[in-house]
Image (tube, rainbow, N blue to C red; front, top):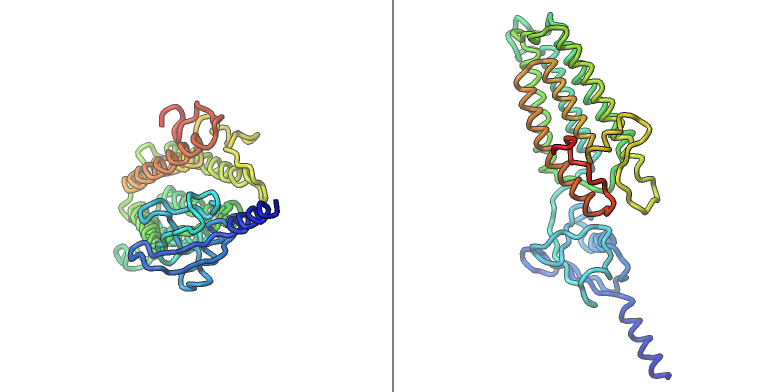
Length: 322
């Protein structure tokens, strides 16, 4: 009996810790060896331990995999639940410099906002010197600037007060591409809308008013969805839930689509296209719709996989269609 107890104790001791070997995914060179790691540790914990040994790679720069070409492990995955033995071999890939999502959004949105205003105020050397620092005689041009400014100020306010960010980050090189996209398109739209030769919409004031009303409704709807998503998971709540409609009528679009925030976003830019009757705006709206459809489909499939009772009537972004 004594021998049996000794054997059980030895077995428990063996299972009480795991060794983790971290290799470079490209060269297979050993970068770090972590001894006596708690099996209940998460991948996030292991990244922190790795960072203590290799300070040049902070946790957000690290991607750890069980295979050189496998999927990166999530930070919340637990070591003992992975298909590893008493010694876990993980392969490290450097993701490069990272920035937090708040910084990312501020860079994208402030740049787009200021770029548009440069054209609206007709800063010298953009158009002919005759028009430097002048204003357009068409009210729709001023209205378009107000709408564009409101859109990005709303996004900035949501970034500060509404959105709940995890510890996720974005690679610096991706931020550069995103900023080029937002700033570049903003400049392209603004150049034509604020151009001295710009002509107002074909159906005049009526077209502008209907488009403005739709734009405002879509902006309110987009904000309502973001607030609903922000309240979906409170701090400390472990159970994940999928979004559902609330008493706010703007959230009732959740009855039909998984990502109504994208639906409202596309609606706002379609309205802006009708209001300005400007081809570059239409092209920007099309590109935005394609990208948001991709994101919405990914999110929609994730909801279906995770929740067995997910409403079958919902589509990704366009009710009953897409």
